[in-house]
Image 1 (tube, helix red, strand yellow):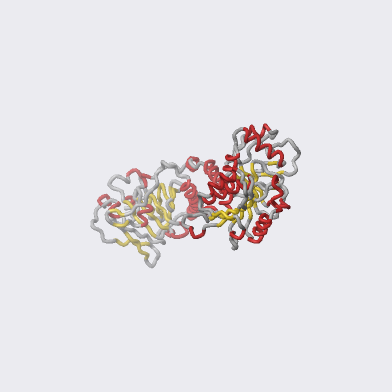
Image 2 (spheres, one colour):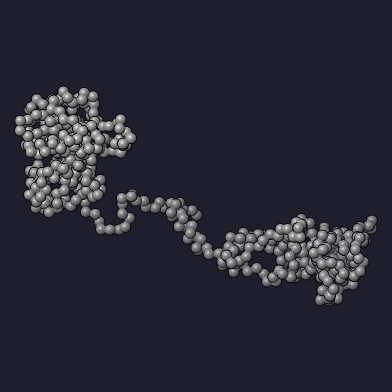
Length: 508
């Protein structure tokens, strides 16, 4: 009887145009050849109408997913008492030559009432095929329903893309069903096999689910990433972030005062450091007065010589290659330095520099002419130098004929200008010019034109003199003069050295 199939859950395939429907059978009319499903689903999406009716011509395939037990189909009320076919596991409808359907019975394990048929778990693979020419339905109703379903299908696709990205963390993620009873489920059963009673009646809350997606937080995270990477998207122009050097302070502070050293007389030449601080030059008389006052306060000549020797040797070691050249593994590449000194305090400064260079495994050749009487400072420095591996010569013939790595010039002194007329002085200048080695001058005088040796670098002490182009690139070293000593001679002084003892100067 047709009433025996009421309450059954079936899957109706209407072809590619209408798709697949699932639902519970609510009515079967053999006269009009229609079947109605209540609470239908179309391609896995709940329909917007409570009931759908199909005609036989639209049905391509019909599968029984679950058959109700005894008493489960009583709540459907009195329906058309037409007979769909004899009770059994499945029925297949055939088409005769007159176009009318004729039911053919399939083999079944029992011919009793449908309530004795096993549940869905045992008969899910049993199928009932109905001839598409045996049923009729209102085409206008189906067309309207298909149009509404197509719209809901496209809307569901968009919702799936939204909900997959905005799923709440506490919301469970559905798992695909895998093996059951040791066998792989049928594809249709995996997609549509859930109990229809477990599907909620209420529509999906799109607005509430979309509210779980915090768009403001995501956009803020994207903007933060773009600002850090220096790229902007969504049509916003690129904004390059501010970049600072490793020695620049990114915190706002008071403006830098670049002129922090002032002298009591007019300045003939000014220099500036790498950071832009202005260092004015001083006259030879003021420089001499500064050293004299410092000596009265305890900065003796011996201390000044030692400090000058350390700073000059440190600069010379850097010019010779630093750690790349002066390495214990490179003993076969020991650099050679020729030291030209005169019999005065500036020569004593050069001897002190040579002693420190010799202590750092540099081959030092010291040239100092023989004099009957030497200054005490020179005698003391020569005594210390003789304890090193450095070589002292008094004749220019003993100097190397091949080029050396560096020549340190300490021949000139403004107070002993008569030495420039001596033969040994002229011969030393000629040898330095012929050797073609770079020259470093320590505390050179102002009038370097009369010197005869063009230096590549010059090292000034405390404050620079107004040196010219023949002095080369000027460096300044700190010899330890206290700030109050500068103030005593009328110089408003603020140290430009920072963390270094030797800094380069540039012409302002």
